[in-house]
Image 1 (tube, rainbow, N blue to C red):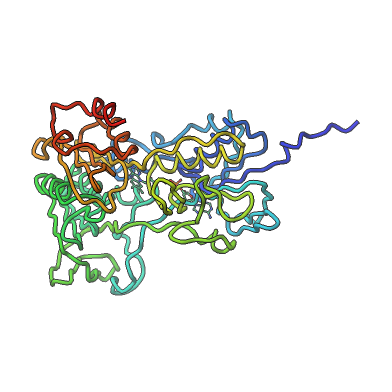
Image 2 (cartoon, rainbow, N blue to C red; image 1 turned 90 degrees about the vertical axis):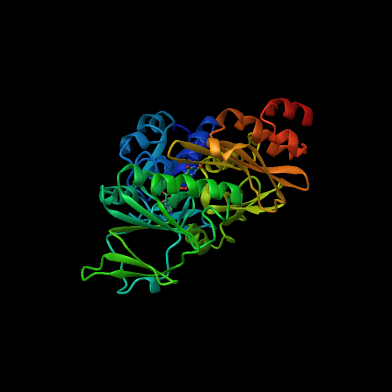
Length: 422
Ligand code: FAD
């Protein structure tokens, strides 16, 4: 008698992209009882690794690449997850449910999770005199990018960073620690202008300047001057400055990797469009992490977020949806950034705020900037306030309405406010 294979063994869940979201989705599927095959295909040659240290501890040489792994290989083996590193998924057929791999094979699937992440926004080609990519002009997304950048961050070298956002400022802090001379060019009137209040920007500008970083605001890149070898030698701004450079980092935002989804016919709009369960508009297809734009009932619109907590949360939500488990609770968006000995933790999205309330003082390098809209807390930036952060996240989630003097009063315990506001 032929042995019968359980139906579940025929099922295949294919995860495209082996980053934070892909790794978490694979493990969560198995933890939720998914009994079919789980394939985790990633175009990078490594096991899934933590990206945040690429601009921090790894760049400073404080940790090695091995220490970056999200999970050891044994964890995937134990969960019977088939790892396919170095595998690019080239095309998808959403009708016949197949995927074309870069090794020439075609893989059938029943469930597809797109976790393709994002990539650095590139500068226009007009910024470079001779075209091509100079060996000393860097973007930072992958371990390979960070390794190449780290190799050039030698004491005494002159690094020019284009973009005063989180990546640019974190790299500035790391480079200063390595004895590199750093200039940051920010096109806006202040660093972190798109994401924080003026008070927080002013604080970070002061911290970086005190550490020796030359921060130039309202400084728009015009183009790079290259030498005979095609390397950048100077960075020219639109107001006529010429800044000598041994190397350059460009950190001007990220774009979602949606081309594969677009080719397959999925709807994209600054990310693969998904509902609150991370389902895309095709049966059996989910998208998670940096690559997707998910509907948020809390915000009443689609959001594309770039953070590790977001990638992990969406991975668990998709895995629950696929296995028919209850959806995990959705937390307010949160993010962190480490620069020098400062831990910045951000809860919520501050778009539309009309009031900023400071708790603590930037002069002490320990404070919270609460963002209020019509008297309700919608977001908060917390610098070195880790012990208060859990309570702050809840205040943000509840959109608590608390009088500004109470929020600002260091003698008032936030946890107690939470109980009052609830
Ligand atoms: P990724 O981690 O980018 O993974 C996507 C993977 O899919 C990549 O390996 C990509 O190469 C692969 N891929 C794409 N297309 C294909 C294809 N067709 N076939 C196969 N594979 C494919 N977040 C924080 O919360 N805090 C921080 O402090 C912080 N610091 C950061 C510092 C740096 C330098 C960077 C780059 C990011 C940082 N982030 C931070 C953001 C965070 O790392 C991302 O939000 C997170 O990695 C998103 O996870 P993801 O799985 O969606 O995408």
